[in-house]
Image (cartoon, one colour):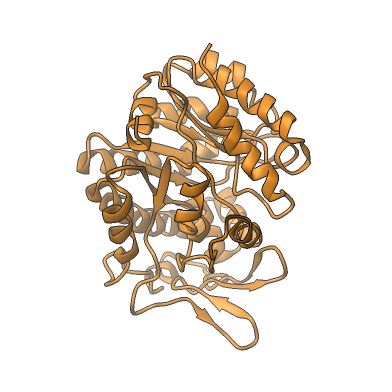
Length: 363
């Protein structure tokens, strides 16, 4: 069974020899893995929202991944700019600065937004800009026949919007029902819908959307606010992808505890739920499988907060096997870390994760 076949069977609720596996890592860990594997890691690719997901493809495949991510990248006319003072500005005008492990947001270009006109006057990126899909097309040609292809569409509505205006301002605007909030969400959703349609048309097996709407202990917004701002836009977005490619499956990433939103995602047309953050309140694999296993494929579920950085290889193998036993019954599971594996995880534990997936046997 090829990796491609394994993914397609799993996402269509058919059991396979083992579930397909996917993994992504942060740059600091990629560098260590490169030395461990004897291959150069190199920098993350220049994608404003998806750089870590689409980088180090050959390294991840050598470790055992069944899937490759593709995404839109910075176009030829709007590359990410690295200023001498360390400020990094992407094509959205969002400014970040590296403070060690991550780039922290520093410039919110729409921080002073007060009206719909302010949104309309802002120069949003062009989804059709030349060069945007060059790397995606090259990856499709190289990997598309043998490996599962995931079209990454992170920060689909909420996150890109708060990067533009600032989190506090966006929450206040949503709570107050400001008209510019709807205008902003529509602009951002339109861009990402156009990108997702292109990736679906290129032949991606999965379009992986997402916005982090949960905290460790529960949702960051109410179901009423989810329905007011996100449900109709998400539903429209999912339908657009499937109109272009009826076979494509749609995944949604949301870290944290998001239990109240799951039925709404299903109603909107969701096929695959990610990342099943293990230590977030209520995200229990047994309950999730029993409750939604006939409606949703599960993607993720392996803890990056405690298990992978702190566990022994034996503990990693036992927990990975336990979760596969639960979540792969009847198909419907892509095993993966619940986020990019962080720099506090050893290369030996990354290897142990992949080895655990490969050594699992169906009972």
